[in-house]
Length: 103
Image (cartoon, rainbow, N blue to C red; front, side):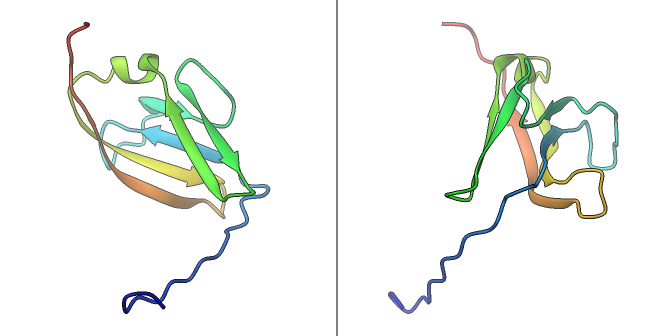
């Protein structure tokens, strides 16, 4: 217990899970393929790296993934086991992009 807050630390077993990060045009839009789709297989859009020892899942997007989005806010989600009966969304929210000039 620290400062009136009880801390609980536990590791989540990430072994055997498949992963997908997607950005879609709208919340109810199930466009296939999504505007951006990244898995643990490296592509021109990026890659997901899973480190089971630390329980870390890292999503890396490339400029190729975000350039075509233009300016705006779109829904995103990080899924484990997408498209299966055990699919679980771990993170969801809005992905905001702004156009910037090249330096």
